[in-house]
Amino acid sequence: MHARSPSPTLIAAAAVALVALAVGCGREDPRFAQLTGLAREGYLVYKRECKVCHSMNASADGPLGPPIAGSSIELLEARVLRLQYPPGYTPKRDTRAMFPALPHLAPKIPALHAFLDPALHPKPE
Image (cartoon, rainbow, N blue to C red):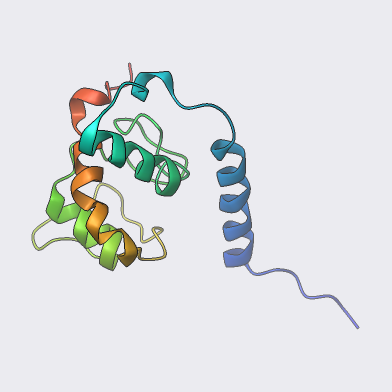
């Protein structure tokens, strides 16, 4: 009897989990230690839910996701809650890699939007 090889989806999910574990360990980013209000709440959501695939500098490419600094509320709601794009939006990448939908984050979208203010994320040189 031959052992079955794991599916590519399973391998990808395991890789993301390992990256999440590695990235999730460590201290808080000092650039964001002084944030307050919605931006602070959004930072905590981003750190927990987004930075694994998107760079901690939301203006930079992440290991799996594109830069997302400056994303509109409409885009955040569509992508995060429903894995869709708003009408008329042209995706930055031709991929459907984002999964799963995170409808539990609906009340946190305004905070996430506040954290994604481009002023908090300098463009990489």
